[in-house]
Amino acid sequence: MSFVAEQLERLRPTWEHMLRHPFLLETRDGTIPFETFANWLREDYLFVEAAVPFIALMIPKAPPSHWELHSQVIAMFHKELGLFRERAEAVGVDMTDLRPSFTNHAFIQFLIATASQRSYAEIYTVLYAAEKAYHDSWTVVKKGIDPASPWYPFVENWAGEAFAEYVAYLEKELDALAAAAGPAERERMAELFETTLRYEIAFWEMAANGDGWPEHERVALAAAKG
Ligand code: MP5
Image (cartoon, rainbow, N blue to C red; front, side):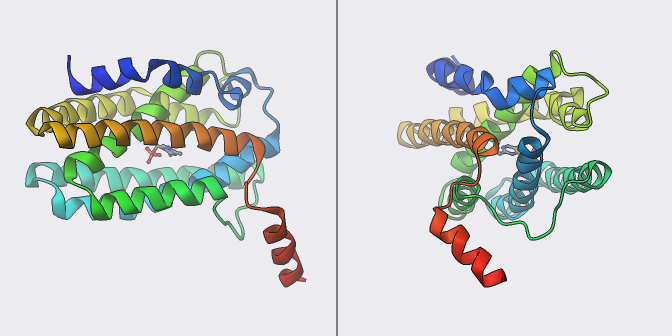
């Protein structure tokens, strides 16, 4: 069995738990409160922004045959950032003074720490797991959302054909990297796959339930702002 198939099989209950998250089902059904979706939009904007240095840190470790891929991925992130800004403007989501939630902050630190300290195959595992999680999650939303929804362009972005092909390419390459890795590295890759999945679930949870920083922090910030 290939590395990816093995991980998806091993983690199936957790993966399915992610795909049943109320944030996804309510977005699909059109019952998601505007502010809840706006919260995700603001947080994910910061996440995608941070994904640019994540990819940039991979490039010196990547084989030259992957440089074109990573250049294209960075360009794709910039296109996504444009989509976030366009949607926010179109529907009136306030994008001023963005600060990452506790979970988003942790996830971003995990990305940067991984890209700084781990092997290329390990970093690639995190990239694949995050992209696959988003593709599968938004595919759930696609099965039922009203195409007239103001959030539909996000669905198209991650559940569309081009993204599906990109994720399939990442999968093929990750399987090749895993096949070339020794048992200890494969073990570390498996662990990172799982940690990424757990962060993805935490991200939906945060989008649905708020920013997670202790209350005294919020009070102090409000006081500082007057
Ligand atoms: C992605 C994302 C997908 N935008 N946000 C989270 C929390 N996980 C994964 O990455 P990309 O860069 O938008 O394709």
